[in-house]
Structure formats: C-alpha cells, structure tokens
Length: 202
Image 1 (cartoon, rainbow, N blue to C red):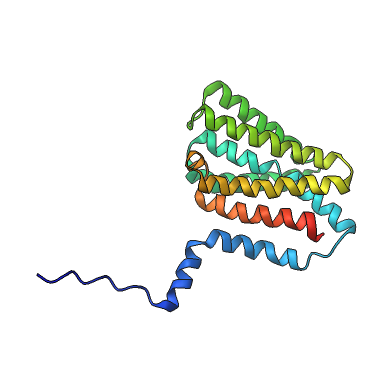
Image 2: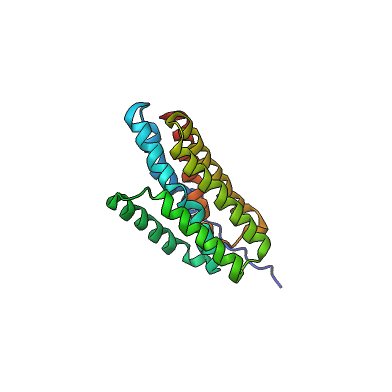
C-alpha cells in the first residue's frame, strides 16, 4: 500500500498574498493610519484640533467593548462600530455637547445594566470591562478639560493603551470572544498609531 500523496503546497509567490489576506485588519489599519502620520506636520491649530477630535472619540472605544460584551455576540461588533461612528458624526454635526459626554453616559448606563442583569461572560470579565471603561473614559474627559499640552498626552495615552487592551483581547483566553478578532486586530493597530501620532508627531 503506497503512502498518501501529500497535498500540494501553495506556490511561493502566493504565500505573502495569503498572509496579507489573513492580516487584512492590520493592513487596513496601517493603510488608514500611516499617511496621516507621515504628512502630519506639527503644532498649532492642527494639534489642538486633533486632541479635541480624538479625545471626543476615545470613550467610544470602551463603550463598544461594553455593548458587545453585554450582547454576548462578537459577530455584532462591526455593526456596533458603525452605529458608534455614526453617533459621533451626528453629535459633532449638532454641536450641542462634546461627544465624549453622551458616550460616557451611555457607558455608565451599560455598566449599571450589566451589574443589575448580569453578563454573558460572567462577573470577573465584566469587572475587567468596567475597569477599562472607567480608565479610558476618565482619560478622555480629563484630557479634554486640562491644559491642551497636558491633555494631548493624556488622550495619546488613552489611545495607545487601548491598543494594548485590544491586543490583550486577542492573546488572553479569558478575554477571547468579547469582540470579533478582526475588530480587535484592526482597532489595536489604529489605536497604537493614533497614540504615537498624538504624542510624538503633532
């Protein structure tokens, strides 16, 4: 009886392309982030505008985790992302209040709901998500309230360490399945790039 014929391997020329397809979230994040980092310039109004824009958006990051965690369905991550981004655009267009305020209020509401009704992933994981929400929302609110020079570094720290938070959800078993892996990879790369841009390149 002859040995089974091994399956043909992919041609060498296709392997980098296949690897890129597997890492499409990171590739897309770099495609969106790197041009702004290269052409960013420094100081002045642009720096202040960037701090304000990213500070207002920062609470959306932990809020997405809270909502998807509470839903218990990682496949809903991207629809929740779309709804969150649309809400920021609408809030900025209305210009009645900084988007960071209602986003933080919604995060607190979801936290209370989780504490009262319970969560799909259990109390220990819920406490981790709650701690993340408090830290990142606090960095955003304080970063927007203090002197812009200090606020820039607080907001940068929030984005950078949320990137670390994303990668922890990719690597740690306890945190796996809170959000979709594609989102965690995409968001992790974007968050780190934004943190570096705010801290060093403006």
